[in-house]
Length: 142
Image 1 (tube, rainbow, N blue to C red):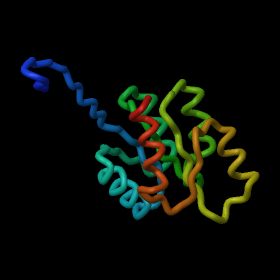
Image 2: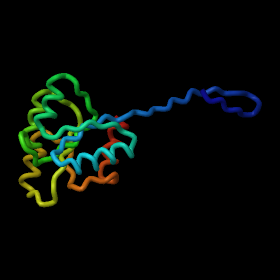
Image 3: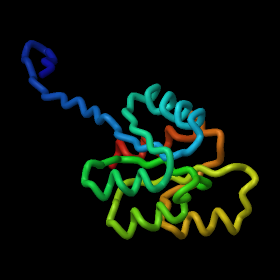
Image 4: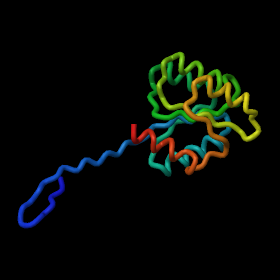
């Protein structure tokens, strides 16, 4: 509670500090990309968990252990790629913001198919704090 003095009378005003810790699932088969994305999330004050492929991400959600604000989803992965994983998560009623992460070489048709699978956004690698921060800010405002 903050107290402000004005002209001999005191007005008491309640100040609510709203700090939300963002919880992020990073789904990528490349350990270097997973580590880079973890570092970005940490620098913006979030916490993260990783999955090496789409199947691990589906299992996390199927077992009811998962609740994420944001999922960073690589497109190309073994066992279950990003497109089929995103479709499956949406079928499972996962409402997290899912952001696809693609390479520059991906064709427009491939990106469109990824978006149609249920992505909220799609970003090109390499991810940077500048690319991801506006999405994180949107989650804080929600």
